[in-house]
Image (cartoon, rainbow, N blue to C red):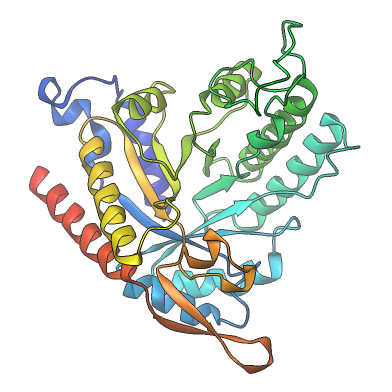
Length: 350
């Protein structure tokens, strides 16, 4: 895993100016020297009730994957991390933790938020130094800071009262005070992880949906990151990929799914496979180096929501409120085949 982190750093030292695939040699596209990282999201510390860690990892491997992205609680879920990580290591797999902190957004100042985020990230970096090469920092935090009707832009102009919540495409579509909290949150995690484990790579990004304005503001604020993160529930085209590449860092899509309500499971599976093929095609021109499916299991305990049926594998309720792993969903087979085809295509490039 440490080698993976080093290699990700090395190819950026070689340079990576965006241009068409036809006019660039392999040297100009150093990210193609390493295989694409395909992974899956899961909730071993915060959900998946009574599904053993070992069973989760068995299913990750059965899907043909070696990388498991998992969110933690505000305290870092230390007890769970200490149990899961050795199991990951014995299998030669990689854990990508998503760390966050608990915030009282109504009362906590940016200074308080920064300090708490810094302390958590530094402690996690020190504790797992040399064992976890890549950390995902925060999750879709920019959503909190999006301008709401009648609020004021940075330049003093009023955001229209008859508009909905801002999209976040531009840097002035975020409310200043809330943004300062978000920026402090991510800055604290970034600085803390750098001090806790200087060799670790930091993944920071946004929820997708065109929110480049948040990435622009983070850059303006001097927040550091090593891998640009994007969530994809709508599809990524050439324009989005080029814009993400413009930040000069590798691109990870740490969450993706086909978010179209009312689709039959088989249709969703087909479109998921198409999405994976699209990533692979874009990778030939842009530094997309990792993509993580959302998610491993359905979560039917959340009621009739999209998240209840987003899994590659079903969960079934048993007596007493317990859950067990059920059959694969149609998406699982489509996912496995699409990943195999993407890997075969990549092998042909070499």
